[in-house]
Length: 176
Image 1 (tube, rainbow, N blue to C red):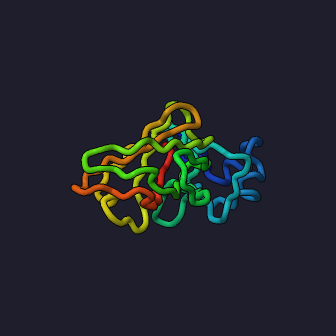
Image 2: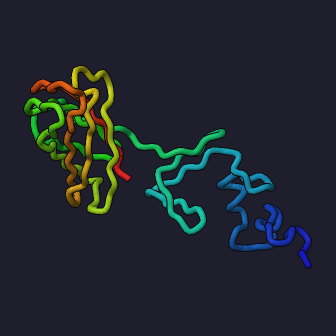
Image 3: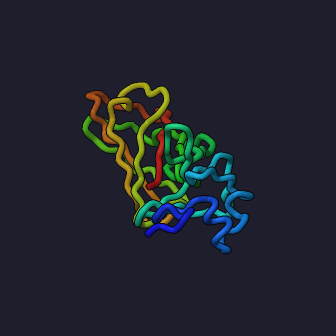
């Protein structure tokens, strides 16, 4: 049998603030909760909190009217002309250029990226972004995690013509 103010297994604000010492004055004064358990004002979480949903842990979420998504700021280092590149963050861009021409049906030498957000069991997904000219626009990009803090990517030319040396590109990646 439900106790007054208890509503069965759901607790009302009145029950939690007047009949349960553990929650007295905390819910109403700090979270501005309404009687349905809805936060009706902004809440700031600090110290990199972990949000849990069921048995899964999630982080870096943004909640807004009608949408929930993963939010990561894109990090981009300066443009380079090098086979190695360092940029950190869960979402990042590599602004670089080819180190040699890529003939049709051939694969470029790998570009090696150092990034502290990459773990040895991470999955890195990427694609070319921005304006892409020449045969590189029809190339396939492969991204492979090489170990902790390191990934490499390369292009396989599927465009039917050679891709010129020094072709500039921007490749965008996200670490999962």
